[in-house]
Image 1 (tube, rainbow, N blue to C red):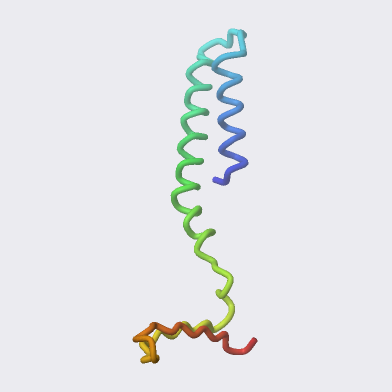
Image 2 (tube, rainbow, N blue to C red; image 1 turned 180 degrees about the vertical axis):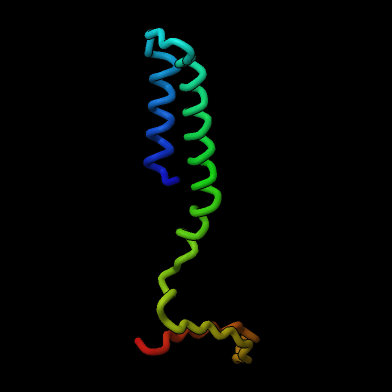
Length: 90
């Protein structure tokens, strides 16, 4: 279930629970609306916790070989850390 379906279920559930004033035999529309809102909220929460971190994990160097080298180097003013970055292939 994606974000669109979850938001749609939340909206339909809210309309059924709060705005519809019809009487349907053997069906409580308020209960159906609350169930739709709960399903939409659960789907949205699951989508954000499961798929959200995966989408943010792709960085700018995902398709390249990126190497960062950190080494200590003695200079006349003292030791310093030098960081060299290289992108292989580009």
